Amino acid sequence: AALRFPYLWRDASFLLKVLRYGARLELYRLRGDVRTVVDRFVQQARRVPDKPFVLYGDAAHTYRDVELRSNRLAQVFLQRLRLRRGDCVALLMSNEPDFLCAWFGLAKLGCPVAFLNTNIRAKSLLHCFRCCGASTLIVGPDLLDSLQGILPSLLEDSIQVWAMAERTDLPQVSTLLDNIHAVSDRPVPEALRKTTSIKAPTLYIFTSGTTGLPKAAVITHLQSLKAAAGFWAFGATEDDVIYTPLPLYHSAASLIGIGGTIELGATCVLKKKFSASHFWNDCRKHDVTIFQYIGELCRYLCNQPKTELDKVHQVRMGVGNGLRQDVWREFLSRFGNIKMCEVYGSTEGNLCFMNHIGKIGVVGRSNFFYRLLFKYDLVKYDMVKDEPVRDQHGFCQRVKTGETGLLLSKVSFFSPFFGYAGSKKLTERKLMRNVLAKGDAYFNTGDLMAEDHDGFICFRDRVGDTYRWKGENVATTEVMETLGLVDFIQEVNVYGVEVPGHEGRAGMAAVIVRPDMAFDGKKLFEHAVGDLPAYARPLFIRLQEIMEMTSTFKQQKFQLVQSGFNPSTVCDPLYVLDYQQESYIPLTEGIYKSIAAGERKL
Image (cartoon, rainbow, N blue to C red; front, side, top):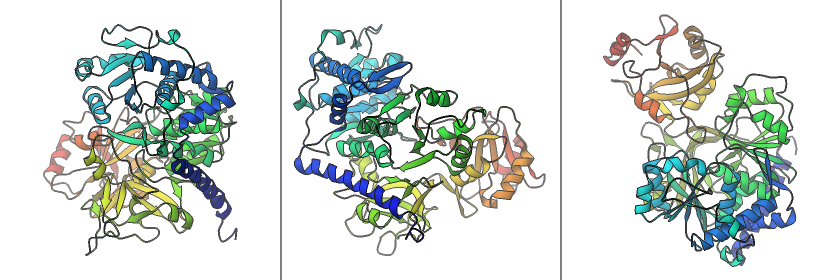
């Protein structure tokens, strides 16, 4: 059996864990007695009061410390802010222990919390308030400046603004920490946070609209409890030390990272910001065993200068998503045998894949039983029309095993989709109806995936990140992985640009050259021609000093696509693919004009 089904035992034990935890959540629902993540925290604070819960800078905060401080804050919220159960409160704070104390203090009062992205400003910030209905804002001391422009609008909307500080220079802002010593550290009545519904909202987490305004994903107790089981499902224990350098306002750090630490009763090393140069020293200093990553974080670590200490650490596992195959291999060969556990799922989505096997380049694993529990489908997608293919009856068509298709997840009683706060329209836009049968509803992930014969699921591309050129689909991920192997390239971002008089989009790559090396057009040409089919070779190269990133370490493409390849409007050096000279040559005004006029063959 082991030869025919090499993953049978690992799959079976993983599935049993999932089922066991699922049964626990189902019991909560049936009994109408939900043990939330904060309930679990209070329980751990009684069980291991003196154990470090959060290590931040040089300070250790035990479970008891955070429990008592969050009690004090809950008392201040109750007495001074006059907050009542059900009032939504927005939190605009950087990563720090008081972010957690404020979050738990509010949860103890039964107040849903909206985590605001610390990078968003003015217009977006006001929009975030309006969609989750928050009437109170709590701001970290280092972020008070970002309120300058919008304070009058907030006060006009009757929003009370409180700073997590002892004093402030802004007259319209009240302070919290000068009140904290005057109140008791006794818990507020437990009845305030008691909930009978596992589907009641507990958080609002904003997902980045790449072009539009942020959307507030509704996070219920069900989702936060599922996410909190992630580390445990991958085999973590209470003896693990978990390193979280990601922003707490995103679900990876808050739901999986902090929630997962609480579920285990483990210790979390919290960083204000990710730093590639401090990463391994931090891991050695705190005996870190598990770290969280997203997107390009592992690539940044690979780009650091090599040292003889690269393999000297206790790290055994990485948990995250968006790790590209080329970086994955380089990461393992350089830093040792670390099991990388990819988790696939969006903040608001109703489906989650977990690569518990640690197979390289795979985002998740499925099998017969998993499909019974979680109904998902991969359906044919038309790149030209940018929509799923429908048959004569108007239904979608499943792809064959191994083929790429759009991942859809069925919305059902066990896999509900809670949508976005304050917008029925946005919620409805993420759903597809009458997919395989009349009346069904599926959550549209917007991701193109493939599942092989062994049940491994690979991420191919994001709908919209795939572009068409010369009648072929070009997956940006694939081109990036290939160009990433060129020795002088440190980072690369691939996208499609419109060319006058041509169908589809031509490939373009924004490239950062390694500090000690120079751009070599001939070498890049050899690589592109040798490793990529003609239609996938980038026609244009743009050299950049820094790469624009979203706050989740994903590359910004939108701005780059908009700015195109006109040398008179783009101030970065531009190059064009030239088959005559067998090189990428500087893109001059003359060459640009001949392309625009349709004289130069592309």
